[in-house]
Image (cartoon, rainbow, N blue to C red):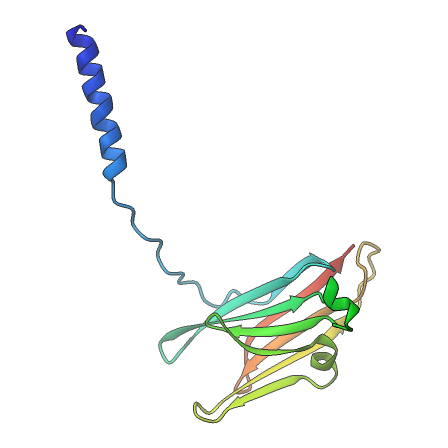
Length: 155
């Protein structure tokens, strides 16, 4: 081998070794808060979620409202569309979308003096590519608005 070939080989090996030993930095934790009202358009047979975050007593608290379609084998057993609430990646509330629309869903945590309330209401839609009325859902924590989302269902 010539000196030029050895030099190119050495440079290539050095570059590859540097790539193999480069330290990966972990992704930073999300810092966004107050994204505002969400609008989610989803096929009626798919699950969908929308989340937001607020600062409460200096801590970032996340909340997600999820629509569960009720499609598939569960439909044979009378499973209806569901709505659920997740706080800091833990499920805290699950119920029929129909009940969330009629009476709302509430859950009280006496040890923390926190009350979660979820209320949904139908949204009329006029466009033909929607299969049914949408749902406007709002989560309140101790009577303070936390997350709101409009779900629209397509064919």
